[in-house]
Amino acid sequence: MKRRTPLRRRGGQRGQSVEAYRVWIRAHPCMLGCRAPSEAAHLPRTKQHGDAANLVPLCHAHHMEQHRIGVRSFATRYALDLATAAGEYWREFHREEGAGAVL
Ligand SMILES: [Zn+2]
Ligand SMILES: [Zn+2]
Image 1: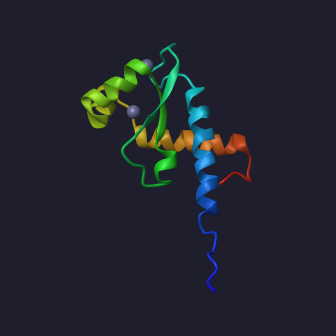
Image 2: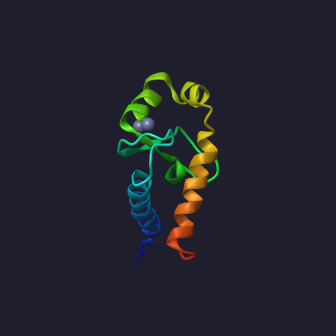
């Protein structure tokens, strides 16, 4: 009789971590300095950490603009390095979470 190895366990933990990260991202001000509440804007991809790290805080207006004009045009317009910024937020999150954090 075959027994299934619970390979999904790590994925489940990562899912929880991503949700916590979304909440953490939204607690930060818009990258463009707006006072409006932030949303977790997702970038198309980040090579370094995969989808989980693909978030930056943007207010609703800038988040919608990012979708409307495309992430590349958005980054160019505001001279943002979104991929680098996303990686920095991700590392900061894990520094605050402590060394034992997931990933
Ligand atoms: Zn979005
Ligand atoms: Zn904004």
